[in-house]
Amino acid sequence: MTADYKYYSIREEDDGELVAYYGDYTLRSHLQPILACEDNSRTVLIGAEALARVALNDQPIRTEAFFDNLPDSEVKARDQLCRALHLASFATVNDGLMRLFLNIFPESCASAEDAIAAARMITGYLFPLGINPKQVVCEIIEAKVDDLGALKEVTQSIREAGALIAIDDFGCRYSNIDRIFELKPDIVKLDAMIVRRAGEFNSGPRMLSAIINMIHEMGALALVEGIEGRSEMDMALESGADLLQGYFIGRPTASQTGMEDTKERDRKNFLSGFIG
Ligand SMILES: [Ca+2]
Image (tube, rainbow, N blue to C red; front, top):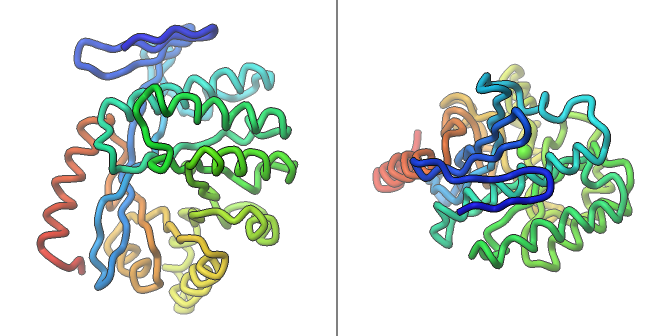
């Protein structure tokens, strides 16, 4: 598959992996698995978050560095490139069931107009790539978007297309509970810092339960990020988390291998009954 756009190109390598080229930068799409908690603390793989791996002249760099100190128009072009790459890569491993969690860069929602354009860009790709909109969860960092009108536009446009909304990094900055209630997200992702802090205090697990209960009151599912060990996994399960993500479950890996490895491991977990 080859797709050329105004600012960049996406090409298929000999091994089948899609790579995006942007000047001297190359980008690859990696997936980090997300588990759903079922009754009796059983877990099952339901999807993955797409994360970009960026290199400059073949040297790996932080993904954030790809966006640093650029004019808005450039940030938007690069953000579009990431989303196009993630969607096209996911399409190559799409089994019709797994969900793709896709980050929306806050700068793409600076205004209502930008937000609508970003949402249209995503939804416009889905049909040609054979991805059911219901499989896509768009992650938005509410705390980084000042304009409530733009937030509403982007959530409404995404929802109208049939995709789901997740509030990302909840609790790491100045998350505004009122605004989140108003946006009616399907999922709220608790920042990794929350589970880490909850593990440091005796009252931590109760605090985590209270936060998760509040998210349930909103009518949303609670996804706990930052599961890096057994103790965090157990605490999240006991606190009523609906979804889990973190290194203990799986690191971001190249799309094809990552999903297959995790599926195999998760299948074993599922068959062996209980985790713990
Ligand atoms: Ca995210």
